[in-house]
Image 1 (tube, rainbow, N blue to C red):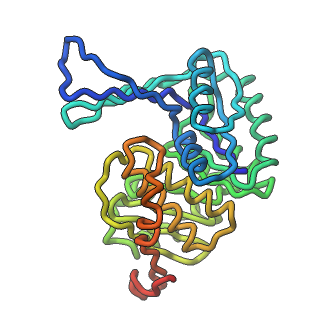
Image 2 (cartoon, one colour; image 1 turned 180 degrees about the horizontal axis):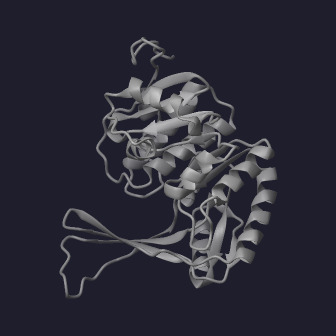
Length: 324
């Protein structure tokens, strides 16, 4: 079983109008989804055929509705109830643009957090792999994810962490590290105080290896959008290039990538398979108008087109050593 964590889920509501008329009525048909990065991960894992349990915090009538949406998606779930109302996030597609209105979500009490952590620790014991994704709600300290990572690692379970800001800083500073982190290039430049581009990969490697915060993390994957990704795993370095596609909706592609990584890591796949699976999922999500959903009919085409290259060692070329 793969356990996915979404601490601040939302009812993701999508409105689409050809032209937004300001200060007037715009009639729309909503599309509602169980949202939050971890629930995007969950939906993709269901598509991949994995046994998945989603957990986190749910509150009020919105929380009950989120449970219904998860049921409709075939996602098994065991969330901790809270008093506050779960949030709604709105994406308004108009005039070729996407305008988002994101609620901050409820404030979580210490008692509610403790109840969740007890539930989480129990679920971790049953899991083969754990993913922790997204932001923390109000009332929860930035080091919460670091503690949750330790719980999973102490239980001998791989844990994939996909977050940013203070929560990522705290997890990187903690003595017990996650199995995998997946910052994008902008986030890694923020962490390192650098301005690397996809043309600076050897320098990026050196900077990461010199930074003690990344020591002990088995997988560090840096995603670079259309430029693909670079990955560092137990001393090996990889360059990943995905085929060019017509992007329909890139939202959720990072979450889909995490799902693919978790799917492969839970199955004890080799490095090339982990990277191909993750990047295939991210690409297939970008081809689908739904968020956290894959165009499965194109799986073989995209999977076979993903290039995973054994990357630079010392003075070697970043493109040397093609993996089979």
